[in-house]
Every structure is written in C-alpha cells, then in structure tokens.
Image 1 (cartoon, rainbow, N blue to C red):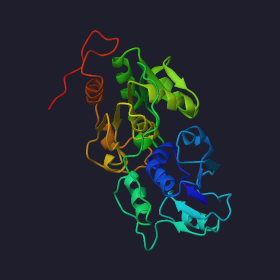
Image 2 (cartoon, rainbow, N blue to C red):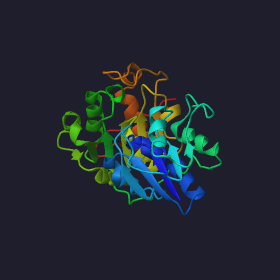
Image 3 (cartoon, rainbow, N blue to C red):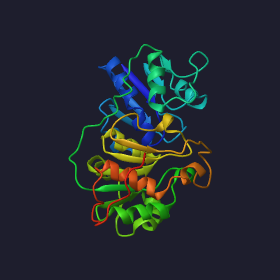
Image 4 (cartoon, rainbow, N blue to C red):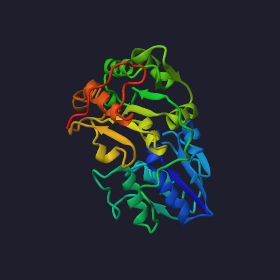
Length: 296
C-alpha cells in the first residue's frame, strides 16, 4: 500500500503533525508512507519513525506522485491543497471539505487527529516525542520567527541574554544573522537544521517565541519559555511537559510587519522570572545575583 501525505509547511507544522503521521503508521503498518514537504526539513523528517520517504515539495506546488492508494491532506482546508492531491489520482482521499468541516480555534495537533479519527484512524495527540538525546548546560535563546508579528523585540532578548550568563547560545537561520548578532554577538550558533535539532534536544532551557523551535523543545521535552502573540497558545502552544507559556490574552494579525502589541506587553522581567522557575529557582548561571522571585 502507498500512502501520500501533504504537509508542505514549516518545522513547527511538521512536528505538530507527528501524532497524525504515527496514527497512519499504526493503521497501515506495512504501507510506504511518503511525506510531501519542503526538502530543507529532511533532517527533521528523518527523525520521525512514521515516515518512509520525503518527497521534496515547496508549498502549494504540483506533487510529483502518481496514483497513491491513499492521499491525506494535512496541509490545510483547501481547496488548493485538496486539488493538488486529487491531481495525483488517489484511490482514496482524506481531507477537510463539505462533509468534514474545518474546526475553528482548535489546537493544531488535535485538528489533524480529529480529521483522521473521522475516517476510522485512531491517533494519540500526546504522541509528539522524538527519541531523547543527552543533556548539557546550554540555554538556547532563539529570537527569530517566520513573521515580524511573532518576534519579540531584539533589545529585550539581548537583555535576557545578558542576565542569563555565559551558558547562553543564540540561534538563528542564515537569513537571521543580523538579528542574532543584534541579540548577542559572539554567542551565535548559525548552522544547519540537524545541528539546531541536536542543540535544542540537549539544552537545559529554551527561550523563544511562537515558532518552530518551540515545537522542537516540545518534541524533546526540553524545558522552555515560549512567548506568545498574536496567536493564542490554545491553538499552537505546548500541550504538556516542562514548558511555560507567556501570553497577555490578546490575539492579532499574524502577518503584520511589526511585533504584535500583545507580544510587546511581555516584559523582560516576566521572561527572566519564568526562566528562573524553569531552571530551578536558584541564582542565574554565571551571575552573583538572583533573579526576582516569582509573584503570585
């Protein structure tokens, strides 16, 4: 049996689909499961035991695949993604549509599990974890995000880095080098996806916005502090585990050209307090002083 799955999106999107992919694997243990997703995600796809083959597919482009026994749309509600899968001439197609309505304001993990359940394929929304790696002392600060609305100001990230001490590593993609330099020149870790995955998997703490790195922390049960805005953590936040979410309760325009006003309401002190609680409440690494105590 040949199963084709479309999820041609980003890193966080891929990792939130892991429970659905594993549900497909359990339902069809002998099938060849092919994932149509961007080629740059290959190192992450290799770590997902439910996928046999990556078919590099950038966004909503034609899919180079013919006549799967089953095609599954984990990309979106359509109609473009649905029509791209129909063009492969599958014997059977699973997708949202007229008879399977798109659930609004549902957590992304549960959305895809619910879709498959309606077609008799059981999924466990908690089945998100990847095989663990050894821990070290690194504290990862990741200031970037796919859209400006999700980027907490660089000056505030820089203030957090200064306070946390010498164990901090600031990460980013090659396109984010100026941002990483602005946050902490000399502490950069710019590299490939495999290196980023390994670094986050082994870190003592991750501090980031609502971006793919937060989902990597979830997948490896790495303690994290995640700054949310403009999207609600009820839709994209960590569902369980050693994570702290900071959110001021407002939503906004994901595609805005400036940081979301609700995100900007999060202060440096809030982030430092949350980080301290995740690190065990002791003195800051490399600092003689203690952070402010947790309030409330």
